[in-house]
Image (tube, rainbow, N blue to C red; front, side, top):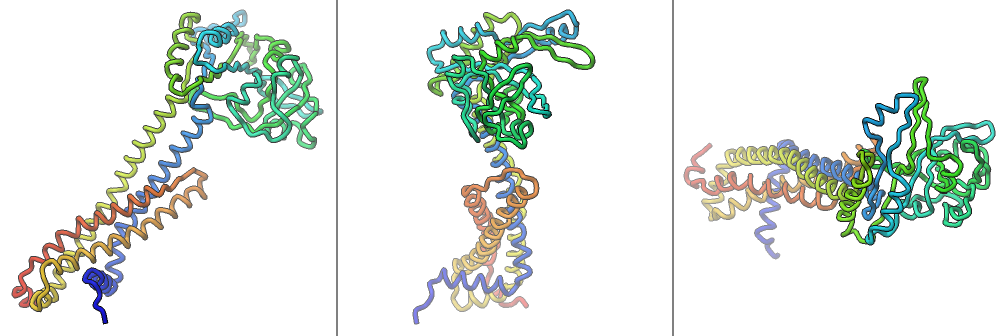
Length: 423
């Protein structure tokens, strides 16, 4: 009969000694279980939040630059007067200049936003009219649920057509097939040619014109039917504003030229706008910032959770020191019959590693369960990465090894004669 290798005998002996004291071993492993579980759970929550933010930014397009009209403070204050008309924001001239000046720019999509009443039969809702071109749907793609989106022919012939967001279509035409229906928006009728799913993206002041109740109409039709002057009523007063374009979405040919193009845009707009009535946002810059923030966030969360692993390591060292004291006579007998110090040290290290590895594996199960519960109960996105599992288990094993060295060394240094004399 072949003898088992020494390492196998040490592992078997270590497991047997731990099984003899099940409750004590379990209590010792709790520190590692909760430590590894908290590391995995906290990193998964941080990773989920970070990815959600990155997805929101990526929906805006990494090659895009977004310029929004912004009402200056002085115009906002002056607009409270009934006789005053606020003039601010981006212009059609800005659109032409940007298109003609920058070679790196692939296309520029203008956007005009208005609030109008949408009516179908007896149903009436306040919708947001989005006047834009066919290229908007290429630059900021959205799932098409039925029909089609705007195209160049609609723009050229000034067609009275509209693409509705899914929510607006459901609420306005609840019992009808929306496609082909005539919907009254403001004082004009439009044929519904398509339904899209809107995915609202809001990052500070940067946003795409996605809302739940959006109606997309060719830009030249919006200009012709509604003009550039908006009248907003609030608290019994009327505020008049003239804004030609509310947003320009600019696509750059290559991602490497995005930030330099944004700097050139800033200089050009500063030259032609006396007031700071616009804001330039670069999704690529936000993307890099969000990635850096996510990495920092994960490191901080991991460090906080690592404290639990440290506490678990201290618990393991404490119990192993108690084992050395309890098993002094056993150690003396083994040394007396020829066991080497390295064998004694190896046995205690194996027991420590069994504790820490088992605790780490159980901790991974806890770490997988917590994010699942968080997602089910709160709806927050959590992402468990294989790297976090491997790193957590590796750290737990390393902690067990480090904190097991001193008890193992102390056991190996016991004098066999003195050990045999102890009761």
